[in-house]
Image 1: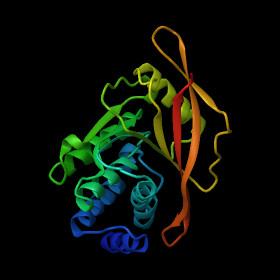
Image 2: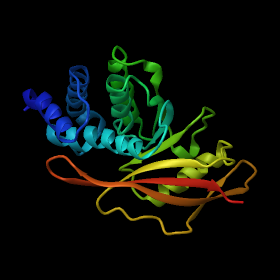
Image 3: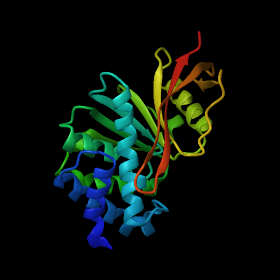
Image 4: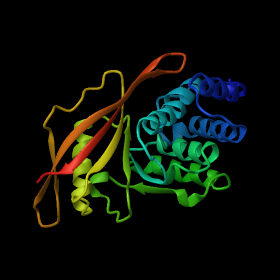
Length: 248
């Protein structure tokens, strides 16, 4: 089974019309093997076959962002935050793909956020292995809950994939924005929704608490980027761009 992983990667990249090169293939093969061997130790994922790792983790992560880029003008040098990244999805494949297939034009940096210590330990492990292939400064790892995280750096786009209820993600993001004094500008969240994804109701607003105890309210709006199927199994995905604007 392990001997077929490179062939699976090549075939699925071709099937989904993604750029492929051998350097990327070698790194993703290493990533997949490490994910499987370390899974018992870190409890990283329930997805453990090579086919599913390639499709449900690697292809899904990259394709969702490529769909976004295809529908959005001037997507370049973005600083991303991957909320609830787990074993590094979608953030790590995005950086790898951008660096090795896009000359690093799209992504300036990715912040990986997860509250599970074992999963962030795995992230440090995989990033240490990747340091000879990509600049280690491209990735920052945060073992913290989003709503408790203090971060002063620029952030252009938030990502969320397989992190549960969209309502909770939005509410935690609002808390982060308020706490980090980012309530003056609109924030954008690219959400990777599954086949049974339910949108937020129109008019939804979310509140974030600042140090004084005051609540900052955000109006939330959404735009479907694309609904699509991918891989031989026709997995369904709905990519939605949420906007959180401070309520006037």
